Structure formats: structure tokens, C-alpha cells
Length: 487
Image 1: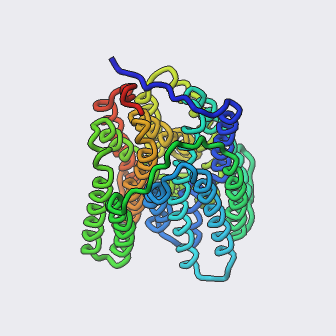
Image 2 (image 1 turned 90 degrees about the vertical axis):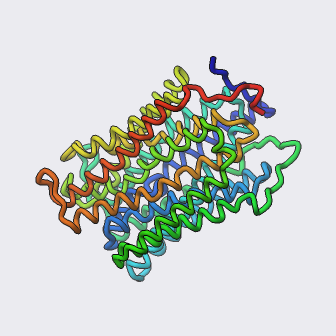
Image 3 (image 1 turned 45 degrees about the horizontal axis):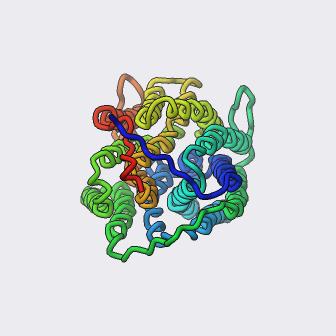
């Protein structure tokens, strides 16, 4: 019989716990409100295309975002003290807000498009480093600052109603970039003023969230965890630079058409994986955690496809990608509202594996829809995709359920790392499109552009499908540790 995890009891009063749960929902809601620029992918790819980039380069901000999601593990090592949680959370939000303001200023300056592209890519990298760290800190704060039985309130508010704010943000995005929304046509404002305003509006939202983070109540611990020696993170110090090096080599290989650079990039990826595996060798020695990690990485490849989904708008809808970016984000988060409430109910009625598989199946459905839908029906793919994005909640929930409390800090940081191995998938998806154009591939009479995009959707679907099969066959329904082991 499967054992269940013992319920955690928080030492804080209910008043303080309630404050923490509400602040968790507020911070999550503000992240959703800034989603048009904070969810690196759709907006950045549309902007990159306006700056003259091809599909491969337009995928670069999202690729760097996911590559840098390994950074929170280093931050957890640099600052392991519980007393630093609020400060670290505020710094992550504050620096993200400053970066959004910086990109708005850069777009307004009379400098080359090449420089602006570099800044857009930099925003993807910094957001990938800072926002997953903020989410990890946020989860730890609410885990320490509330009873386990009360956290359903925070999840319902944050992930059920929070996406409504993302819909509001997407409405503003449509008004700025132009497009059609619910039968209303928006002409938008002129470029580059529309993108400048969009990024500039995100800055005060995150700076305000940085202030809100100061009001959390974190119960003190009897003894702070000391920082581990440098040797404890040598795998990360090797793996993270090699990840970035591999992306740079891939860019150079395609730019100069040198196969040896591509093979060197593959070797760098291998070294990166070896470094990460070495760092988490103890965690990955647990069979359930190892299989859950493999499943999560496979399904997280779906997080890298939105840039291509947006760029395909020109083929599927006959309009510039930025004209549909707002509507796409609106559908993306509208569906998430309904899915968030349903999946929360499903988790209460079933088990952690059911939530993981359900969200992965929705993710898969989005790619199948994108492959076959045409005209305005294609836009529904973004709604389905948005609901499937909740894999980012239910895959971590499964891994946390399989973790001892003494491993919470390490495993929470590990969860953010799982997006990094998926980063090369974004580059792969963009390269498939560019290869189809270059070699004039055509399937069933489709144009090379359409062929390339649909092949990238199929490739993404294969990754997700493989993850679903592994989860179904190899993961237990309830991975909770024996109560005697949860410390």
C-alpha cells in the first residue's frame, strides 16, 4: 500500500499564514500581469523578426531563457540562509524590472538593430536566471510560512485567478501591437513605440512586486544551513558555462556553415549534461526522482515551441506575427484560468501522477492542433498550449511529493534546472524551419515555410509523447515518502 506524506505544521499564527498565502497569490498575479514580456517567447520572437532576424535567431531569447534556468541552483548555494529568502526574492523581482526598463530604453535609442537584438537576447538570459529563482524562493517561503493543508488557497488564487491578470496584460499588448480580439480590430501604435511601451509598462509591475515581497513572514530556524564548499558545486560551475558555450557554437556553426563547430557544440552539451548529473548524483540515485526528471525534461521541450507557433502566424493567418501576439497570449492565459481550477480539483480527487500526465496530454494536444488547424482555428492552439503550460506546476508538484523535507531547498532549486536541458530544443525547432526554407522541402504540396513549421510542431509532439509514455509506465501514482523518512 502506498504511504502518504505526513502533514506539515507551520509555527506561524493563522493571521501570518493568511498574509503569506495572499502575498503568494499577489506575487504570482503580478508575474502573470507582466506575462507578455516576462514569458520569454512570443513577444520576443515577434520583436526579433521586426529587427530583421531569421527563425533561428528569433528563437534565441527563449533558448537563452531556458539555458539560464540553471542559475537558481547557484544562487541557492551562494545564499542558503532562510533569513535571506525575502531579500533574495525582492532582488530577483527588482532586477527583472530594471532589465525591462533597460530594454525599453535600448529600443528607443538610435542604435543598430544588431545591438538591439543582442539586448533582447540578454533580456531572455537574465529573465531565465532571475524569474525561476524568484519562483523557487516564493515556493520555499510559502512552504515554510503556511500549513500544507492551507496551500490550496494560494494555488487556487495564484494559478486559477492569476491568469486573468495575464489576459488583461494581453489585452494591453493587443492594443499596442495591433490585431483582432473578440471581433474588435486594433490598429496598434507605430513601431518601435509599441514595443517600447510594452516593455516599459512591465518595469513598474515587477519593481512593485519587489516591494510586496518584503511583507512575507518567514519563521526563523534554530540553525541556519552553512554554505557548502566550492567543491560541492563544481558540476554546476562546469555545466552552466558549457550550456551557454554550446548555444554560441550552434549560432556560429549555422552562420558560417562549419560542421566542426556543430560537433564541438554537441560535445559541449555532453559536458554540460555530465556536469549537471554529477552535481545531482545523490538526488538522481533515487529511481522515482530520476524517472520524474527524465519525464519533466522531455515534456518541458514543449516550453520551447511558442516562438515558432507565433512565427507560423504569417503562414497560417496571413498576417505579421506581432499582429496576433496579443490575441495569442489572451487565449493562452484564458484557457489557463479554466485549466488551473480543473487541475486543482483533479489533484485533490486523484494523485500527483494524474496531474502530471493530464497537463502533458494537454501540451501534446496543442502541437497536434497546430499541425493540422488552418485559418483562425489555428489560434485555438495557443489556448490549449496555455493550459498545458501548467505542467510547470504539476511536474514540480510530483517531484516535491517524492522529496524529503530535508531536501526541499536542494530539490526546489533542482526543479528550476530541469528547464535548462530543454533549451537546445528551441534552437532545434528554429533550425528545422530554416533548413526547410534553405533546402525547399515540401510535403503534400505545402510551402517550405509551412513544411518547416509543421515539422517543428511534430518534433515537439514526439518529445512530449515520449515523456507521457515514460510517466505512465514507470512512475508510481503517489510518490510520497514514508512519514518516518520525511524530516
